[in-house]
Image 1 (cartoon, rainbow, N blue to C red):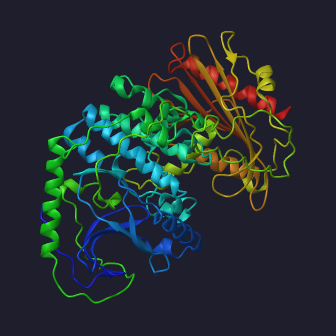
Image 2 (image 1 turned 180 degrees about the vertical axis):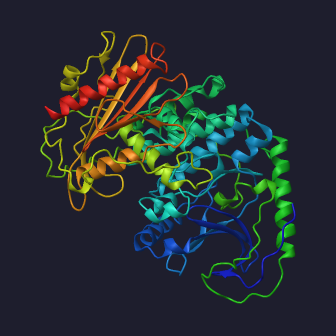
Image 3 (image 1 turned 60 degrees about the vertical axis):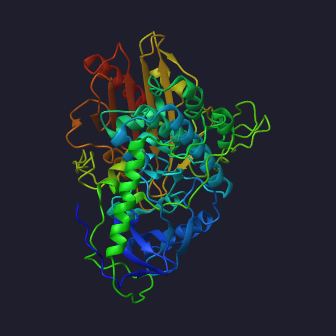
Length: 576
């Protein structure tokens, strides 16, 4: 592939820009040359984000923390200017394919390479967490296979993107569905344990060539991450206990990075740690970079923090097709021997483990009449639906499987004038069970986390709502999963407007259909082949999600009749 040069006048800070490596939601990644000749990867944010004071403050905070990260297996930030006209940060550049590129080229890694990868990732996370950061987006494209070992890149920077509505115009999203942790899907506060879950998913991809959670759509993947068991059938037995521990649904049950190193044990040092085909990719990339830098001449005129010229040629050789995530690192020694801790310990801190405590619960917000109930803490399918809505907003049109469409609202009264219908305490699972006629073989299940959900902030406009969840399961494994959100009128929006916005955000053009289902004001189905049925419904200010799945309830009339019955019973219990 031919690559043309970039005019020599482009500078960002002290770095002469010689190529554009790619673009992402937050900005673009550029190949730069430092005054001393070092190569760096410069990530410069989009101009429209630079004008947002909140984003700039988060960017400054995360870059400052990222500069405290040091270690053999991370990509250190070497310079940054969060106060520039368009903020940027730079990291040393090391040629080497990403893990995703390597897997595309050579398939699954052999066992010893996978063990070396696991040890490097664990040590990298230990270094990142020691600096007070959570990576939030560990995935194969953020893992580089350098000639001498693994590098983790883009740590902590994803935090700056959170809550950034302007990213909806640039196509960004925080997190990649197959590698997100359940609490990330559910919208709960993240701790370092979320990175360990992502490490486990990344390691499954590395040693088997496929992720542990799949689906025929993004919503299906997210649902499986939050609620289904991972597919570990092809994982080598030597790695199975390690990966199972990482992929525990409960963050408190996952090992810390230090404990992971103990589980991995000593790894065999090697001058060429990866399959030969991976090293050939790295050599080809290095040669391409060398040719490109050598061909980029011209004197430089400093224009600090100015973006590169619009006609800068994109640099996209085959070995760099994931370049938007590349920042890179300095040379690293071989992996250290694992510390001499003999046993696996979890995050609960009761065994002397250097673990990560759960985040404190948010104090309840006054204003919505309620009783104390045992509700699942953030682990709702409705929160999963929120994540789906965020994906629908963040993904660019050509990649977006949702393509939301406007749908007429039932009735003639504008939602802004509709009073809340559901104003009391939302129903408990026992109260709903009294209204829902579920088959006798189903039993109400205890909630997996056992914490209380009270008043919560809406996913995008700070409105209060209450949320709850119930699960019924049969001995044969069939399951009914119910989640409901009760919104209230506050500030400048009615509860009906907020419930409608949530409901509409989940419509997926071409894969869902609307019809007179007979529950609530409006409802639609979304189902995956042979996986049961999923019902979304809204009645004024009360939103309901029902998922029915199992061998006895494949997609069809029986499944849908049960889902509708559950939704109707929930509305009856909510209005009682």
